[in-house]
Each structure stands twice: as structure tokens, then as C-alpha cells.
Image 1 (cartoon, helix red, strand yellow):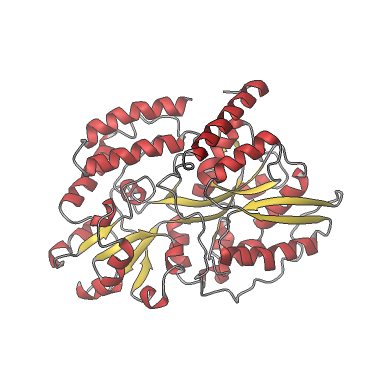
Image 2 (cartoon, rainbow, N blue to C red; image 1 turned 90 degrees about the vertical axis):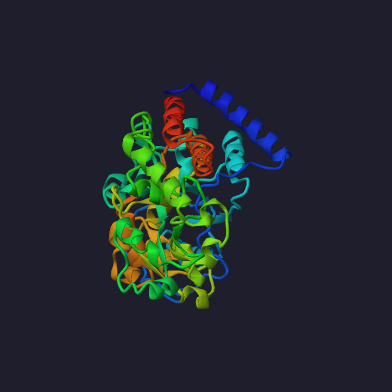
Length: 448
């Protein structure tokens, strides 16, 4: 539903007031189900010395005046180093009339800062934004739709479908996926050796067949929390859905027979000690459980292999997730590029955005310490990127990655689902009754 400018401004100012009150009472509560905002860090390692060849003729042009664009980002240390020392210098060499002012933003409180920037007209020209916020700011009227911008039509079919879908709202795209990730399987070599596994199981049935070989204190797998991020690959792979395919209806999908069965199975497996205690915050935690051989596998992103010690990473290996009735399915993470309607240099900002999606920039971030997965399928599957340790597994897993519901009310939906998952695992609620009730509540949120 379209809103008038006056109504939008009133809503926006109300939102600013709400966020300000939250800050006074201790800050905004961040969603529990979000993947790490920074996938790099001081301990990122392995590919920093690899540099892609210069971009050459990228096919981009800019004939405008000399400008400086402001780019807000949330990169980690290793990722930011690539951006500062490789990507921006190459861009400014090719486009001497466009200068890029990089502003690294802390994730805590960032949403409030964006809202304040939009309301005051001080939002950046371009931003690397969390994928779960795009639809929310699009609904506010703060973002530029990119459907008709030069080059978007050509780019659209080159993206992985899951990451691209996170930019879609109300019939238009309000951004483009910059970098992506997903949860894949991280398998314990220690437990694989004990169980005499030479090839990774490809289905959950094959995994369950190993249960009787476990010793006390060992489990087949564990999630890192009972929420819509950490449990998503298991829920999806068992056939569960949050909504229909176009994200407009929950009833009949969230509470369908297959979704109810998926949640009932998760509860049963937790009760039987198949699904490990880390799922509900118990010990051992997932990392130590993998390294010590308590868990056969867990759901981990590519950052797991750069943010842990080499001697520990030597004890695990990456691999595809097992398939259930729904297949081997995972959840999409990452960041999108978006432009604000208040931006003063939209033409130049879009040129830089397209450069960040080009071969040089996409491969530079993948080969750098942060190991960011390209969103352009061609570059993700290139020989250079495939040579990065573990990258091949995640690129393959991305083919079956599903985005969390791209809707302005997703965080409200997610909070409700998180509470239901936890309540069911504690036997404070029953999966069918809980999903029946929640489906109606989510329908109302989807309709807003």
C-alpha cells in the first residue's frame, strides 16, 4: 500500500522517537537469529596475499561532475583492508571524477543511526546493509528502487536467487546483493574417525543410522540456538516453511502438515539426544563440541574457518548438509547494497555499486582474509574463488539457500518464531497448536 509523504514522515519521526527511547533504556535489542555482522576479523587468515588482476574495461561510464560519495559499511578488519587498499584505489583510478569516502559503522545501534540519517537528510549515498532491513526501509520510502537503473536488468539473472530475493519488496527491487553466505556443514574429524566414516552422510536417515555407535556425551549434530537463523537449515531440510513462495501468507504453510512434522521431529531429536544441548545454550558449546568430538556436525558459516585457531580448524572439515524430506536446504546471510532517496550523488553511487559487483571487486573480497562469497554466480564458480579453502562447499550449498522472509515485519515474526521454537523444545508448547496460532499472527504482520 502506498503512503503519502506526510504520513511517511510522521511514521519516520515516530520510529526515531521509539529508537531514542530504546537507546535511553539500554539500547536496541538485536535479533538473536542474525548471522555475524562481520565475517572477517583480526584473526582472518589464509588468502590475504592473493590479488585479482586489474579490472580493465568494466563497461561502466561516468560523465558527471567531480563528486565525493559517502559509503557506509560494516566490514570486519580483513574485509575493510581489501576495500581500502585494493577496491577503492582501483575504482578511483578508473573513475577519477568519483571519490569514495568510506565510513565503517558499528552494528550495535546502526538501525537507529540509519533512521536518524534518513529523517535528517544525512543518510549516505550508498550503504552495505543487513539483508533483513532492506524491505523495512523500502516500506518507509527511504530507498531508491533499482529496477530501471542502468545495468540492473543484465545483472539480475547473474545473481544467486536467494541473495537477490532479499532485496524484493512490493513488486520492486530496492537493492542488490553485495556479498552472501549461508550455513553449511562443519564435520568433526575426530568423531568421523571413531565412527569409521570415510564419506560424509548425504541424508539425515544416514546420520541417524550412526546413533547407536555414539558414546556418552556424544551427539549427532547441534545448532547454535533455537532460532530462525540457527535452526533454519534443519527446519527447511525437514520440509518446513515459514510462508508461501511470494512471502504473502503463513496459514497453510507455517502450520502445514510438513511444517508441523518438521518441528515435531526437531523436538523428538532433542529429547532423544540426537540434537545436541548447544541448541538450547547447553554444554558443550558447538565449537568445542566439534573440536573435541562431541558433535558429528554442526551448521556453520564460512567465517567459522577464519575466526578459530588453525590447530582447531585442522580437527574439522566442511561439507554439504544432509538432506531431509525437503532436500539439503540452508539459509541465506550476507549484505546488500542500497541507495537512499536523500542521496545527492545517486548516479555516481550507482556506478560504484556496479563496480562492487564487477569481477575485480567480487573476486578481491573472496580472495581476501574475509573470504566473502560473491553474489554473481559466474565469479563464485570461477577457478580463483573455488581455490579458496572451503569455498566450493558454500557456493554449492547456496544453490539451495532460502532467504528469511523479506518483509518489513520480519524481525517481529522472527521473535515470535524464536519463542515458539524454545517453548516447544522445553515442552511448554506443542508444535501443532503453536504453529496454528502463530500462522494467524504472522498473516496479520504480512498484511501490514
